[in-house]
Every structure is written in C-alpha cells, then in structure tokens.
Length: 615
Image 1 (spheres, rainbow, N blue to C red):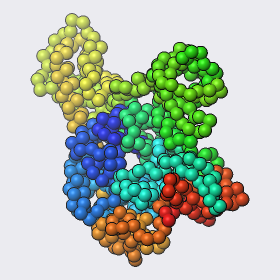
Image 2 (cartoon, rainbow, N blue to C red):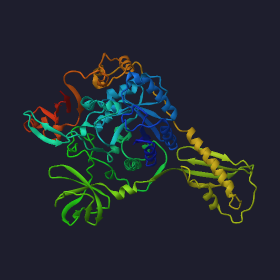
Image 3 (tube, rainbow, N blue to C red):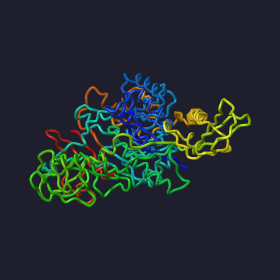
C-alpha cells in the first residue's frame, strides 16, 4: 500500500499541536531563523515540544530552513540544524544547496518549493543529490506531476490549499528589487497583492486600480484522489502565517477527504500517521479566510476559470443575500436559503466603483441588521459574510481529540501474578506483569465489567480501550487498586514500545557523479546562489558558470531585470490571449503601473509564460 501524508502548517507550537489533533500526518514549522516566513520563527524548545507530541502519533515534524544563506551565516545555520536534529525534527525543508556541503547530522533534507522544481530532469537531479522528498512547483498539471513521479523514487509533495504566489516560487525578485525585501530571505512584501493600472502600447490605461497579480486561493479538496493516482504522496496545506482556527478547520476538512478516498480504495493506500481524530465541528473550508478558490493549473495548462481576484486581495467571504431597503437604523435584507446572521458577524460588499468595504453587525434580527458603524448600502446591493461569529466561537478551545485505539488482554500467570498486554492496530504491543502474586479470593459479586471499567480509565493518556479479552474467571476477586497499578505500568510500557518502534529516516546519500541537466549548467541570478558552499555544490555537479543571487550583489545590475516568471497570464485572464487574436483587443506592449513605477509585461506564447520586467 502507498502511504499518503497530509502536511499542515504551523506558525507556533500551539498551532502545530492543534494541526496534529485535527488530523495532520506531518506538520511543517519555522526554525528559529532562516525560515521563509520571518514572522513565523520558533525556538528549539518549542520545536522539541512539538516533536514529542507529534511522535506519539507517528506524526512527523518538518522544519523550514528554506531561505538562501549568506557566507557569514553558514556556521550559525549548521549549529542550528544540529540543535533541530537533537530536538527530534524529522526533516528539514531547504532551498539553499549550500546545506548539502555543511557538516550536518544525518537528518533528511526535503527540497522546498523555492527550489522551483518543474521538470522530471530537475526532480531526478535533486533526488540524486540527496533529497528525500521534493516539493513540486504549484503550477504543474496532473500530467506533469505524473511525469515527474515516473522519473523519481522519492515522495512528491504538492500544495493543495491556501494562498498562491503568482510567480514560480523561488524565482520572484520583484519585492527585493522594488524595496529591498527579499522573498528568498523570508521578507516578501507581497507585491502581487497590490493594485496596479494596466497600460497598453499606446500608453492608454486599459484597467485602472485593480489587483491584477493577486491570485485566488488554491482549493483542491475534490482532487486528492486524482493527485494520489498521479503520484503525489504528501498533500500540503499552505499557511504558516494563518491563525489556529484556520489550521484546525482546513486540516480537518482535508483529513476527512483523504480518509474518504482511502476508504473508497481499500488495500491501495494508508495514512502516514496513527490515531483517530474526533472534532466538535463539521469542517468547511469556505468558513476560513480565502480570496475565492481555484484549483489552479491542475486540470489544464490553460484553465478556463478565473485565476485572479482582481477586486480585492482580502477575504471576500460568501454571498448571503441582497439589500432590499432601510427602516430607521435597520437595513432589510433578502437572505439566501439557510443563511442565519448573528450579532458580531462581519459583512462586506463592493461599491459600484468596485471598492471593497466591510462592517460588523451590532445586532441581527432575522432579515434585519443594525450595523455597528455607518455604511453606504443601496437596494439591490449584494452582501457577503467573511466572518461568522457563531463559527468562530465554535472554533475556540479544544475542538478535537486524537486517540490511539487499543485492545487489552488480562490473564493470570502460573505463579499467580497478573499479566496485562496492550496492542494497537499498528503492530505494537507491550506486556507487563504485576510484581506481587495475587492472593486468590472469591468475589462477592462476580462482575467482569468492573475490570473493563478500571482498565479503561485512560482519560489522561492518548489511548482508548476498545476491547478487553479477560482470561480470568469472573468469580476471582481482582482489587481495583491492583488493576489500576497494572494499567499504569502497562501504559508506560506501551508508550516506550511505541517510541522504540517508531520508524526513523536518515538522510539520503548524495551521488557525487550526477550531473546537472544540460540546460541548467549556466546559472543566473534566478538560481539564487548566495554562498561559497552552494557554488561548490553546483560546480561539483557540472555547472560551467554561476552568477550570484541578487541579494549578494553590492548593487543591482544595470539594465532590465526579469523579476517574475508566471504561468498565470494576465492577457488570458482579461480575454486578450495573443494566441486568440488578443493583439486587437489590447495592443502591446503592456505595462503595470503603480505611482511612478512601471514594469513591462512580456509574453512567451510558445511556453505560455508571462514575465514581469523591471526596466
């Protein structure tokens, strides 16, 4: 059976533990430094705490060390990796090839999405270089994923939900060249979420003040089966800056969807971790922050559905109804079937000019609302809800419990000592024997139910007793104190057995003889080589020239710089694809304009790519 892994994000230890409780098979969390989200760093002690909890369910902890590294930082990074290894981290997610030349402990390395792996040749090279898991570019179709899967033996990790970068990850320099904040150093300024004007070849404004590069959020919850069949093993949820309620809800939703797919294909797949999760809510990804949804390029290299959310980069919510009129301080609404509004809900709307605005409901009475602030609504205006107060209240506190179902067997040994064995569904068992021989007495009222109840008091552990095979005659009296002592001893032994039998993985051996693909032997600033060790790595694998990363240069090069490469095409999004006569709809060349700054858009129709050029 193939093993499938649901990989959830965690900005901190509490969120990581919540993700585990809600069904994650693995979590990824930021290291103390050099994670690609500078606002989501965690201490070694916090990561150790997460590892201890995660490993009790066979959940793995991947730590992100996926920025590029300066030469003066390599020693610090190496020391940090040793600390992470001893804290129990199961793998590192990395971008910088310099780590493969550091004297690291034998911790597995995963190739980050920042490595921009788009082709079977690139994936094969990374596998041979020593990576144990490869995160593919978000832009790949199912057929392209399958082609990569056919070329490698290591697990493939693919994003399934959350925010999308408009540029291929690792190949976006727009933030750095515009304001010095490097995405490859964890400081992305999110230039793609800003508003721009679009001008044509006659310098006329075609589109004004729209978020032309802001993509909708990914949602592939209905495509997990197709992705698994294409060769995906790890299904990754984006969101290391998201709050805990987001992680709870989305993780639980995808966990349920993955379980349903596995149940429909018996004997073919299994989950990568252990335990059973029970939530207090019904997961619904539409309830959590989103910019509208897309499955991106998964079904087609030229998707028909809109990819961008040009009106706003914020959570635009779901439509709940329309405004019908006003009476005093109350607004009358026509609500969609099944919609109930509550005090404190957040509603939003678009003005006729396309401006996005929001407000809170102070009081809701059926289809009448009393806004907490002044609003400019009009009859016929569509209203959306992007904050559900009842839902948010339901997501607070302990909303899920994860347990290991176990069976027990109780018997009396020949020397009259009680024996208890715990077993689980994963091939682990532990047997303990009481230290003191039992003094045989006849029970006043034989009742094996008392034994099951006493041995089943596992509330402060991660175990739930499912069945007890009681091999002792019911007329023999077994003191509850003796059974409780034996239970505690058995739980300790079972914990130890599960720890000792937990599979661990070592770093793959690098094949020093493997060569870079022919077309990748001349490295430009797009390859993000920022230190001597990374340059040595590429040179040893056949690089003939290496340009340094922009971040290491004393000043930016003169002339034009390609700062984004996108599979998303703004022309296609606007219905002006050059392959379909778009030159007559919007005349080239096109420019993005924001204030006094301009970027030219180049379109490579042969490969269906859009490039953003800094003049």
